[in-house]
Image (tube, rainbow, N blue to C red; front, side, top):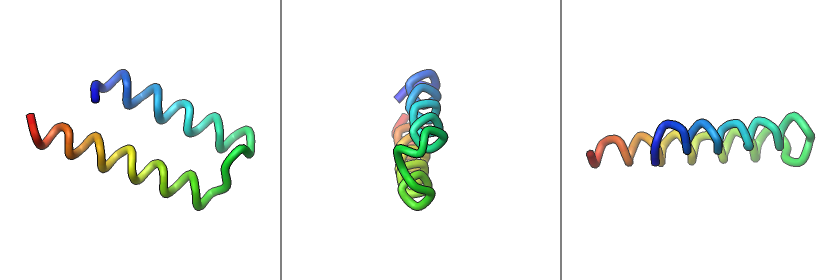
Length: 45
């Protein structure tokens, strides 16, 4: 995942939370998954 792809996904996640489409727990869970996935991708390079 590129830095731009990660930023887009985080921006979308933040928008969903701001628009109350998801709750705080879901936001935190998805954010952890995104950041962990990005870290794992970087570790493999």
